[in-house]
Length: 450
Ligand SMILES: NC(=O)c1ccc[n+]([C@@H]2O[C@H](COP(=O)([O-])OP(=O)(O)OC[C@H]3O[C@@H](n4cnc5c(N)ncnc54)[C@H](O)[C@@H]3O)[C@@H](O)[C@H]2O)c1
Image (cartoon, rainbow, N blue to C red; front, side, top):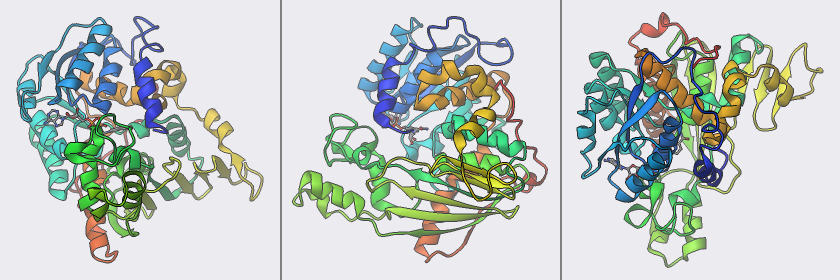
């Protein structure tokens, strides 16, 4: 996640790491069957997923769909280069993905389209009986959050939210520490999406990271659709990279749940200033009033008495950080500063560098596949999220990050919007599990399969 430019470079050289290990079988068991995968949306993110599945010996890419023929051409180029059979192509209109979903030769679907398509496509995919992987965030409104849960329950089709940060090496090491009770009883978390996206939300319409101040029809890649959300919504529109890992650590929807949230937003000046600096004050976009506050801070209370502070900070100059802090009765980890303190182990009142702790508790998955994962994108975590998706789909079992997680994490968007609108008034989370969180068991995270 640290740099989208790195991500693109890595995507370009993807394959050099993993493909050099021919016949590498992923997962604990030999594949019971090969998985036939269809991808809907092969923009920047979908192409990254495509490359990761192309490298596997247990997946056939049988179909791809995108309404942008340039993206289809790029995707087919990757398939060809990988020496794989040409998939069936869809994309003649915005609903052509439904024809992909009609294909018998598709077992599982990976959806990497703009946010407003997510729930619609995921719902259709589950209705078509496909094992469904959905990019983040999963839903935009509370109704959509419920749609994901209801459709999963009605159809029995599984939905995995493809939250890659849950698979980051430090995050999984800290999860390992949590499960081994190193921090003691958990009390407090901090996290967020703190990423200067000005050059993503605004570009020149020619290249995704080109200088320029256009968006919508005049933009390219994410500026085509993402910026509109900053213009019209004062909400944390991208909560899952931060909250996903924290929710897993404190067993949300499995013995715990989000109860309520309060949210506050600063003024929004970052995007306007960027437009004036790069496009001049006479540029038509300089007249726009962006509704989204530059820094949005939400505090979630959980049923087990923890608080989670979630920050959305994407419109101001700043280095990237998800700002993780995991704190329990015996100590804490803070990502900013890369530091750890464990009572009785660390020198009293002095931070340890987190490096040695993270190495000591390195997750079994990273120990086993770390070397192969390196080229897979976003420092390797993209390998693991797709690995979990494919392994769960092959067995047709519930994924580690499921429809209830997708709904609860994504609900932060409409709830933060309502709280900000009402001067920070607390907003209750619906119980998407309908009471089942009380007896649902946590996923078995500490293993070396997926
Ligand atoms: N997990 C991560 O680290 C990560 C990183 C980047 C993006 N994302 C998420 O991935 C998703 C896609 O982001 P992106 O950066 O690839 O954006 P993008 O704009 O580069 O790609 C989106 C693609 O979807 C296609 N599309 C739009 N409507 C369609 C339709 N009806 N049918 C078929 N195709 C359609 C577009 O033509 C485009 O190629 C977003 O939800 C984003 O939040 C996640």
